[in-house]
Image (tube, rainbow, N blue to C red; front, side, top):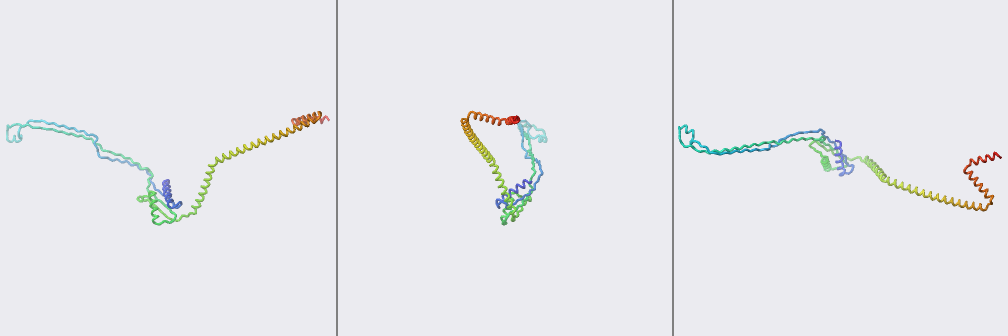
Length: 278
């Protein structure tokens, strides 16, 4: 019942809004329905018709002798000795046997629940209308909703100015909501491409940083190799300019430095032992 009322209201209101404009019509429908299920059975008979027919025919003919004159006259007049006559006889018999059957029609009818018993429509229109326009709209609404005045259906039509402040506020909120949902839809559509772009940008940035680090490391190693090479050359020059005793002391010093670097604790123990002996 509620679904049917909503369908009528939406249908009539959309039709009126196409004529008067959006938001210019409000329609409410009230429908009374019979939810009883009715089942009827009926039987009717047609004219009888022949289902079988049997015809029997007999015929016979022959001659027979009979005394002449009327026997009653003979009795009244006394004995008579006249001539006898010859007669001809025929016999026919026709028998017809017919069997009839009357046609019978059985009907079972079930009326589904939900029969409409009454429709009432309330229609509010914004603005001003002439009596002719109002009558025309009333007739159009009645035809569209299937109003039947014979069963008591009715249409109430009222024309009056609407309060549009609340409508304007609702429309503004609706526009904001639609704008937000539209932006949200765009973000959902662009989310995967943006993530792909960000991922590719991160990969490119990482590769660039790795290349710069590799170049920096190569540059540093090249500088270290250059410094080591220069130091080696200087050391070689110094070693060549030293005397044999100085060279031996330098080698011993380098060995001590290496020992101190590798085993500082052992070197500390040896120094402590020397100090204790002194």
